[in-house]
Length: 142
Ligand code: AMP
Image (tube, rainbow, N blue to C red; front, side):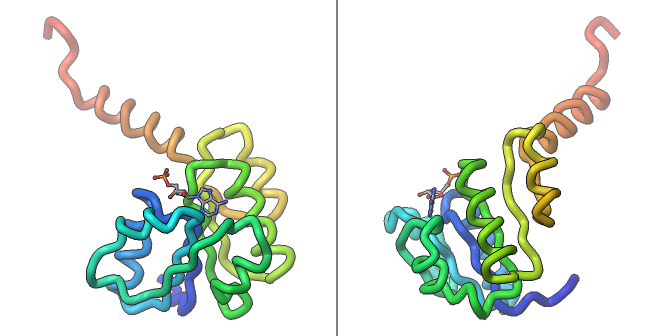
């Protein structure tokens, strides 16, 4: 795995906090941005990174998170529009080399591709997991 040294995570909900805790445990420099300060309670006591409160759609907030130093940004809110916008700004304005966005709507993945943004689609991942579980389950009546 490439050792990204400065990672900005947008959204400190369930997903963002898991990512922040794990990457911090791996010794990476992690900054988590959330517009709701209460969300930082999801971070573990061992989390050694920084927390920035604010709307990540604002350039000033991303700058406060040190985006100009970052080599990786993970857009992990539950809002496709927010994730797309932040990821796009990270790529085009701040030239962050690795940008990954959570996108629930599979039909929007193409838009992200056009901007060189990698996507993780929980909807498709869940569908795969359901179908795999179904394939393992014994057929009714057998
Ligand atoms: P979840 O609801 O568990 O998926 O977490 C989503 C998190 O993203 C919440 O803590 C929200 O406060 C946060 N969030 C949503 N939109 C923004 C935004 N524009 N800037 C920063 N944080 C956001």
